[in-house]
Length: 182
Image (cartoon, rainbow, N blue to C red):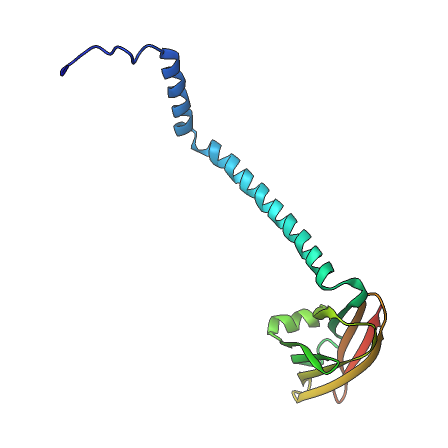
């Protein structure tokens, strides 16, 4: 039994052996072929995840913030270089709902005409008020703090309120104005 003995059953199916060898060599010799299809599949899955994410976000917004009760508050700068915005606090019906400290990058985006969504939430129809507390540095380098209030009546449907900040020369006294968007 020991020693060299003839191979009896190993060469019975040379086609099977050749097929196995071809499959093995193609798998070993072409490493990029499997990787390319894997990369394509990963890209496809990533696109599907992004698509589902967008759908979930839209569904979440429609469920959490129904159109009939939605209130959105946006911030813009009317006078681009007159204010160096530091922070904003926002109150709806004397309840704090948003606060933000501004980085230099965010300030420059607002100065370039950007619009910031400060708050999105739900309120019932009826009489309400928004109060904003702004801290900034004016163009003449004075540190200023301003409070402004805006009473409004919420009706069914989405309501957007623009909170516009500005300062007029020569004294650069900051002001806050509110504009309702239907």
